[in-house]
Length: 161
Image 1 (tube, rainbow, N blue to C red):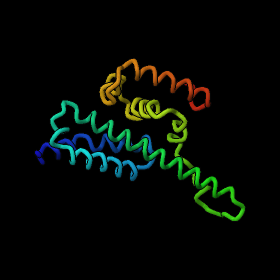
Image 2 (spheres, rainbow, N blue to C red):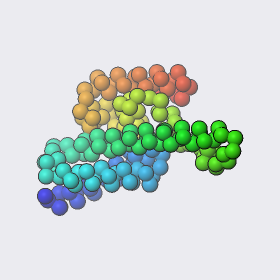
Image 3 (cartoon, rainbow, N blue to C red):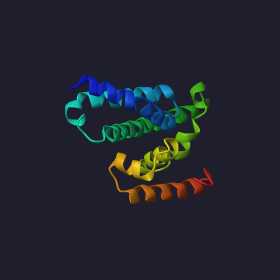
C-alpha cells in the first residue's frame, strides 16, 4: 500500500465528498462523517482500488450509497418522531425541528434519481461525469434527470429544475 498515494487521493477528493454530502444531507458534520467512512472503506481496499483509473468515481459511488443509507435511516427516525408526536402525552421538542429543504425536496425521488439530481445540481457535475462516476450510460443520467424534474414540478418543488 502506498501511503503517499492514499494521502494524495484524500487531499484531492475529501472536500468534494464533503460538499456532496452536505448538499444531499444538509448537514456538514454528517457529510464529514460519511466522507470519512468512504475513505475508511477506500483505505481497506486500497491495494485493489488504488490502481483504478478513476478512484474519484469509486469514492463518489461509495459516498452516494452512504448518503442513501443515511437518508433512509433519517426518514425512519423522522417517521418514528412523528408517530411519537401524535401521542397526546408526548411533548417532544424534536418533532418541532425544521427539516432541511433539499432532503425533503428530493426525498420522494427514487434512489438513483435522488443521487443523480444531487450530483447534477448540488455538485454541478456534467451528465458525462455523473455517468462515469455511477458507471451508467449518459442516457440513463439524462432520463433520470428528466423524470426527476417532472416529479419535482408536479410536487411544486421547482419550475425550472
